[in-house]
Image 1: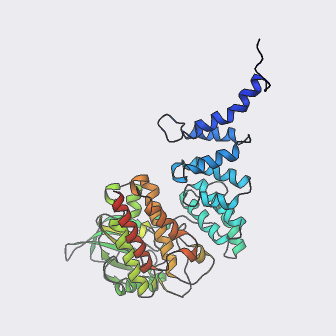
Image 2: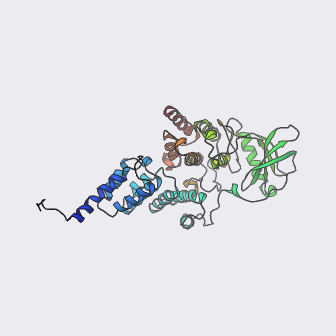
Image 3: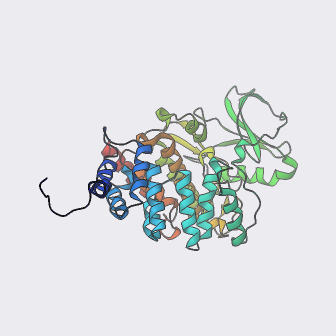
Length: 401
């Protein structure tokens, strides 16, 4: 048998070349003949046990975070954490919104001492699944460390099952369309005028009279494009009448994944930012910007509703809806327009998560959402600045399509 020169035994040689073969297969992710997510995760797990781990991470990140499936991106970030590269791991996950990614991001923030931002992220996980492993324990522990209480988190109050009595009002109730902690909203018919209206009936008018009047007065003070119109209010019987939005709330459209109504995003995202700009210019912070409080009269005609917890800028911040409260507000900062900017960014994220790549073919809306929910000092200062950024995103999205 001819000699072939020095080298490892055949079995060892095959093991030596195995990582490169595995890496080549892994880097075919996204190609028609490439691995699916499950196979890719298995391949990456095999590479983590070899000296090729660092090269695999670098090569995968070279493909671009947006090109990697979310589960694989989280696996790469976890590997970076194990290697002590915490900053890189945080940057890798900056635009990831899956529950595993949010929990890992929250852990990184907590390790860095930013407990308020960690709480904000884990609350987004609890909003989706109150029993997500470890989420409630983290939430209680970090809130306790912040000194803001350890009461168990509650989901969005729109899912509450409270009962509301038939109101003493000249309206025929057609159907219930929404329910929150303060009251229920009904599609109704004005018997005298024969028009459709939204009738909000407070659960406890005796207790919440001041909030009801406040909600109506702020909406009237901000009357104009993008703010729901209030037609009438009865504090004694606990109801107020608002204009009817035929397309309903973004929350319901997201559940239905109604792309026909929600896309293109600029149709409603631009006027919604304008409505926030007007509110902030008048000195108000809405404090509850979320899909349940954005209504659509038409695909391009959003209405901001529910001003019950609106406050003047600089006043103490009230409690808010789980998953939509900024880290700074969690930490106790006074009311600031950037709190609404955070909520706006969360709405953008919810739409992108629900509709996928079709919602953001240019990637520009995702960039804006990340800026809105990102560090306070880099977040748009108020609705006016936000509106400028939103128009820029709309132009870039339009150029892409």
